[in-house]
Amino acid sequence: MDAENLQAEFIKQAQEKYANGDYFLGKLNINGQHIDIEIAIEREGKRAATFVAGWMVRQKGVITNNTPLGG
Image 1 (cartoon, rainbow, N blue to C red):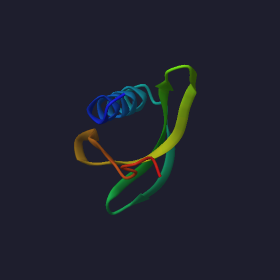
Image 2: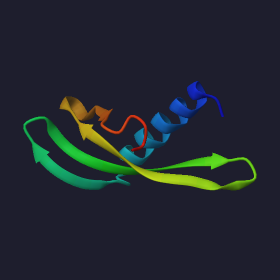
Image 3: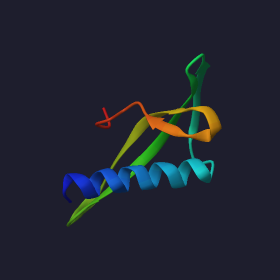
Image 4: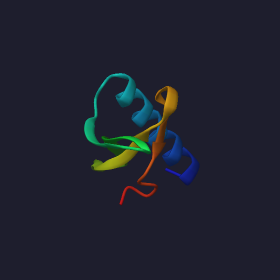
């Protein structure tokens, strides 16, 4: 999977899981509500790679990624 497709899949999963309430709440502070979303990336011939990515809920429900590389 190339970088553009990987990014698109990462964002797609995060938006879908956020919309469905499939996330874990973190701290709420002046920047917004922290949430964690589990991302699964399929790998050819192997098990999916999964990790938890940190996100911030901003005004009007927009989410922004705090974990750009899945750190």
